[in-house]
Image (cartoon, rainbow, N blue to C red; front, side, top):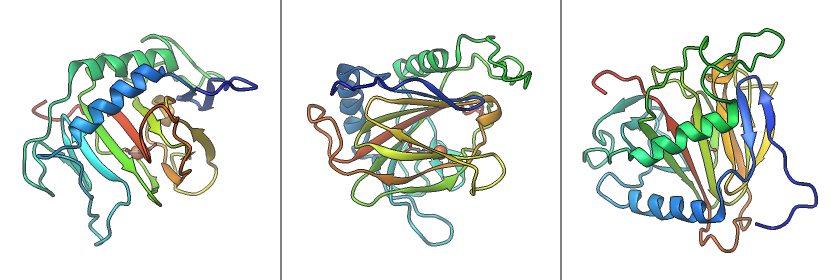
Length: 235
Ligand SMILES: O=C(O)CCC(=O)C(=O)O
Ligand SMILES: [Fe+2]
């Protein structure tokens, strides 16, 4: 990691949405990248996602635990090779819980802003294990439009880990895709968590900055791993 003139600070972008720069060490980034390379292999590997309107997502995706397709979850790759989704490893769930605690505080912590009642207990966030990972690979001009992560049935926070090229991550409001939103630069190793009142906020990736990955990582492009609690029937 290049030394910064001013270290980047943890920022609460909106109540319940926190950016923690440099959360993963260089070694942990490399280990997560190695795991992503394994998960990307077929069967049930990296695929291009087709949207109902006939378009395709520019970021390619692989899932663990539950397979996401527009706009539901399944146990097999129903819109691809039909293979069973790869298992969600316990260590990744542990990483998810640690991420939430580091970003938002331990369970039961009140991080109210002006009495807004954003305690994780009152938001219904649970101790249920993280059981879904969506891994997105961005190369070239890949982007992700503004959307909500709304296909899970659990209110637990979404945990986002970034590897490789820096991107602009746009974090918006819960009403619509338009302003107000905040643009955050996510770099390799950064953590972003959104839960509580921010859990259903619109967000997207308008831009990836090619050639900005840490030279030692060995990744061209950007990987983002989001961890979610599904709360899905039959889990
Ligand atoms: O790539 C990112 O940083 C965001 C990914 C995302 O929003 C998603 O997987 O739902
Ligand atoms: Fe998302």
